[in-house]
Amino acid sequence: MREYKMGRGEHLEERIPDMKATIEEYFGPVTGTEEYDGNDLYVIGDPKNPVFERIVAGTAEYSGKKNKLAVHFEERPAEDVIAEGNADAAADAVSAKNDFLLEATGRNAKSRRDSLKRTVEDSDTDVPDAS
Image 1 (tube, helix red, strand yellow):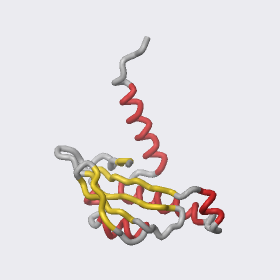
Image 2: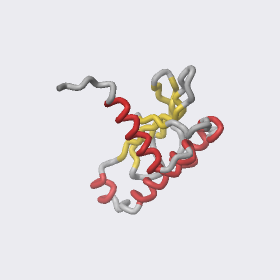
Image 3: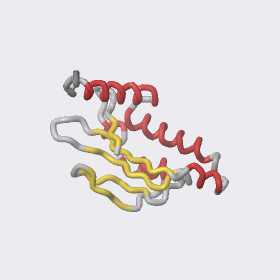
Image 4: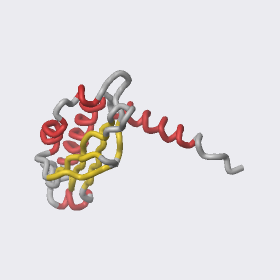
């Protein structure tokens, strides 16, 4: 599960007031819910894009902190997708993921990568030097 934070001064509930409807618009009907860190996230068990096997997405709420978007994309093996003649669906899958994450977080792919790098670098500073 990957969590995404919003840009400075922005809140997830303002960017996406109806999380379930937004998820269904991008990926297909919600087929259930799944618990993650005390939060119920939406499960799309049969996504409309054949590249995805299953998607879990929703709001991760933390007391005293801004809410984050929690998402897990399970993708089918590329060989299977290609063998079924759905190779062109891969580009649509990437677009759907990026468009959804941009709408939710206000950050493009480059900004999200940079943020993840900073998070990893910050966690590296907590590790004592082995020398």
